[in-house]
Image (cartoon, rainbow, N blue to C red; front, side, top):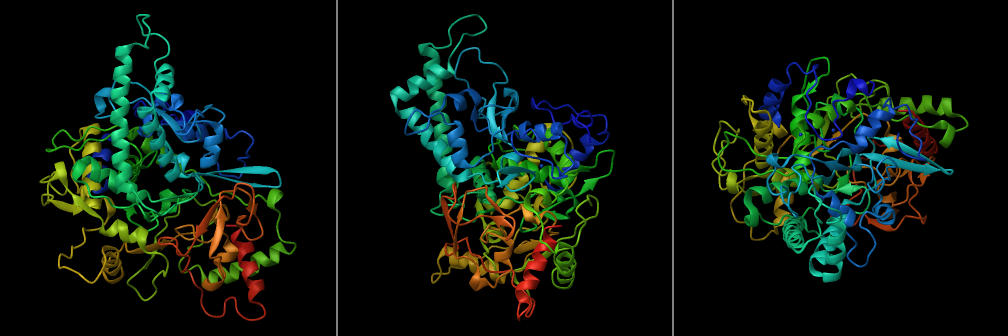
Length: 616
């Protein structure tokens, strides 16, 4: 697909519907109710046969999805809390492991500019100077910030589109909050900040740096600080995620709880971080996310429009800095910064993304590669394919039906439960949504407290309805494709809250209490492994549980083509220790039928299977 064919990703954030969407308005309305959810790389190579053009990569890196973290001028003026180093300095970006984008100096890959007009906004429609423009640029994140990978070997770097990034989102946010607080409280730091933000003159040639504008700026900064500290408190956890992991559901749910309930939202630690999922083949799946919680459903057309993916992606943006304001009543929907047009176009572009091909010219292959691949394919077919469907790397059309491994089953995943468990159990006060029909326009009214999945579904539905003004005909509650679970209200004095939730998740039956297996196309490019990134290489994953590393180092992009994963011993950049003994970090599960790797030929078979998986 050429750039001209795919200009539907608008880098300025404007909503320009294309002629090949003859049913777009109706489809978006249906999406709201049927399920309210997508190289310009400098020195890094991007020739891994993934099909995207340089133009498509550019829009993937730079187009807004409606995320608004802080005003762009503030971000460029902001200093680190403990000195004068710019917050967006190359050194700080590297410490956080986000990738540089030479096309946007000072802004990493996926750190994008949003220009949503003020009339669509609520709290981010703030002003900090007289005669401020209607569409003041803000800095936000898009999908590529977390879903772009890079590995290095032999002095070469390989950029992986749609792969798993190493970005440390948790530290990004803690550093940002600290910097904002110090700027608010330190007069010298605020003075430098104000001079940078209020530089130049307005349209009438009057200086921007005036006492009145400084006062406005100070008030706006205090408002942003209060907002960020409130969200930080809701998400607070002692668990350190490290590089390449995020409790996305925790952050999304707490954002929804905050916007609907405000100060009444209960703190619910975001303590179940998982690896960023890789995105190739995503449009072929019947359900997505590690726990299979979000369904896909594409409408046919010149460019298929996925009515469920739109809702799924809208929910993601709400969690990652969208401005959305649910309110009592629903006839006019909920104002938001969601860029529906770009979200739809992202999903369509992902439908043309191939899994990366193993770069044999860089990593090499085993001396007896062909025979090992043949033997490994036989092992995979016999022992792995019942869960991990065999899909040709170039196949971007065949539907993929999830194979779920549920906690309450004869074959449970035996790995850490908390990502799926939290998504299933978390609840919060309904706040301004109390009494809203559970299916947005109809259904049982939301009660005082509801599952956060239901509150998110209603919020997404209202935000999308406000943008399109369409009559919604199906249930927004099907956003997650699962009914609200019954709540146990009897006291459990002998159990902690965490133990009570664990008991629920291990004993109740639900199609989202578990994790899904998927085709392993491009698996070589997605370390570390298991849903929570607790096993560093494919070789370690194929070892018995007791022999897997209990701790390993993370942070370097250096790649091990033999074991297939990041180098996890002492290496430049490996400055975070992943400890599998901590809650949420368990590396158990994904065990193997007796005999596969046992006996004198067991190690050989393990290497044969790895050599085959390099080709997927």
